[in-house]
Structure formats: structure tokens, C-alpha cells
Image (tube, rainbow, N blue to C red; front, side, top):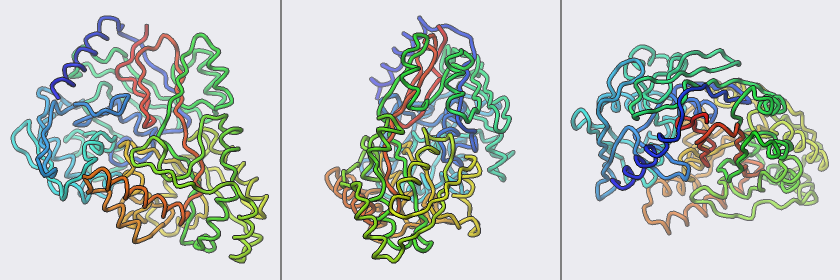
Length: 511
């Protein structure tokens, strides 16, 4: 651990000799953030903004190694149930309150006792948070949990000021509009649907950082407009430009374009409670009807690969199941067996949240028409879309098909399988992320085993079995795994791109 800290210090010191101060990065987004309360958001846009305002005890680097952050080191008990963190001293939240063990406990007690969107990261795993002294804190786990440090590196584990919790904690929505952390940038303004502005934290604990004066996140839903703004020099960074225009950006000598493997799966979920989608034959038929390779090569321009599992290929625990080959004849046969040869369905989709999301929905509409299924594609604004899918109100559970993506910010498969497929997370309980209302007792059992198994061979066996059953049950149309693409001005240096889909600018500077 000391070696890791030393290497990180050397890297930061080396950067400081060449880095320059000043400038505001203009980061253009396809949609707005939903909440800036780290434990109450599930979208990567909100998470990206949060990661510049807040910090956790540990953090990922670009290779998904776990490094110290607000904790300078930690110890794990021999039985794997006690994690002791030794905290950095002298750190202040943006509102002047102290960062210490009391602040850590207050935040995690809040997360564990409130029904927040990310409470499921820790509920049932963390039994208790204990204060040892002002700068030492212990996490007592219910059972050994091998990816616990990965959970602490998730954006839901970013720590909020105790003063902000006292002021706004009774209303998570209001707390999510008044973010206060320890990070390199402080919240200044949020104009809903337009922009979020952050300014430099002059008292940041990492000596000499940040280099930037601020970051402005601007919302521009139209893909082509975002590309044009980047090429015109009106913005500095964009994530996931449309595949058809990547080659144009790559030819622009003023820009840097990075294309790297990602952990996001894109899928079309079924409301498995709603007839006729409660019939597995219907769900399997719609899987066979989709030419995933064609989606990847034509619409995604080879910036995606066909999916045969709920886990992306580079997520820990992934197992290739074989999936559903393109077989429209098989699809028609299954529909006929189920007695639905003239099926009509509605497909909800965001427009601008994911690369070519609406275009993919329309392409799926066309493919399903080939087997006699009529689909009405209904695009929705991102925040309204998420609110409908996560609503605790049964009146909002009338949807049939929905296009969505998931990238596990913990970088491991349990944080795909548990929130999306465990019956505990069917609305209105748990995380509420099981929007398909999927329930299989055997899958629940395997997911529980994955959570607590420390033997790697057994762990991978449980992962493989769970994925095979889920694919067979077909609560989704398994579409594709995405790559990550970031394009930015060449004079903007040290931009981090994590496989978890986060663009990190806190170490960046303008040349």
C-alpha cells in the first residue's frame, strides 16, 4: 500500500512540473444530471458531475486499480468482515465542516437508513460503521464480501458534508440540488436542462491542485450539434460522439479521440409481469428477431459488440452463454406457439442519453415488424424516463418495453446481477432497478452466493450459472456492449477515461 501511495505521489509531482493553471473546461452532455446526491442517482451523467465535487475513501484509476483517496490506508481482518480505514487529516468540506470519522459514519448511516437509489450498494452488506477515533473508522460487515472495496470506489460511496446532511437530509431531492463535498471543484449553479457550473476549490487537500479554474457541463441533446460545437472550438470535451461522425473527429488535427473497451450493456427490458410479456416464449421470440450484428455494424459503426449476457465482456464475472442467434423463423414459430402472431407493443426509449439510442429503437422496431410485431417507439426526456421506470407508484408500471443501459461503476458483475435481477429489487423495495420485475428463486440464490464467496473458482462457477439462467429466461432483449469514446481538444491534457464510462477532469490542465 505504501508503494502505491508513493507511486501516486511521484506521478502527481511529475505532472505539476508541466501542468499549467487556469481555464474552464466546457464539457457538453447529451442530457442533464438527475441528482447530485451521490447515493441517490443511477445515471453516469449525474455520477460524472458528482465525481468532481465529492470524494470517497478510495477511488479507481484509469485501469480500475483501487487507490487511496480520503483514506490514506486501510486494513482488512483475516475473516474479511472488518475493514479499518485510516483517514487523512486536515481536510475540509466545501462548507468548512471537518472531514473526519464522525463525518464518514454520519454519511453511511444516512445511506443505510434512507431509501436512496444506491442504498442497495451497502444494505445487507454493512452491519455497522464504528468510530475508533477522530481519524479511524471501522466498517463491520454482515459477512465477508469480496468486492467491498469496489463498492467504496463507486460514485454512490462519495461522501457528503455532515452540515449539508443536517440542512437538507430530510429531503434527498433538495440535498441532490445542494451538493457539498471535499473534491477539487465546488458547486456554483445548476440551471435545469441547460448547464451545471463548478468552480475551483481553493482549499483542496491535494497540494497544487486542481489546475483548472472550473468546469461547465452544458446540455445539448442533439448529437450532431455537440460534434459541431467541439469542432468549432465552442466546447472542449464530449463523451460518446455518434459513431458515424467519429472518423470526422479523428481527422481533425485539433482534437484527440480515444476509443477504448467499456463495461456498458445496452438492452431492451420487458415488463415480465404484463401479458403477453409474462410468457417466456414471447420474450425469447423477440430476442431471436433482432440482428444484433447488424445493429453493431450499421448503426453503431462497429463501436459495439453483440451481447450474449447481462454482463459486458470486460466486466469481472462475465461468461459467454451463446445468447440468441438471429433467427426470424424461430421467432415466428415461438410467437405462433404462444398464440400471438399479430402482437402490438410500445417501446419507451431515451433520445440522446446513449449513442444512437433512438436510432437503435427504430431499427428494432423495423426488425420486429419483419416477424409481424408492431412496435410504437416513444422517446422520452431522460429525467422523466428514469422517474417513470423507478417510480414507486404502481400507476407508472404500465410500460411494456424499455431501452436502457447499465455500466457497473464497481467494475464487477454482482453490481449488475443484484440490482437488475434479484427479486429483492423489484419496485417498490430495494434499489428499484429491477425494472423488468424479473424473479427466479434459483437466480436469487446464485446472486447471494456470488456476494459472499471468496473462492474465485466457485465464484466464477456461480456467475456462469446465473448468466445462463437469466439469458434463458429472457427478461431482456440482449443487444450489445458499448465501447467508450471521448473526444477533446488537443491542448487539454491528462483527461482520464475510465472503463466504467467516467471522464475525469480533476487532474486535467490546458497547455
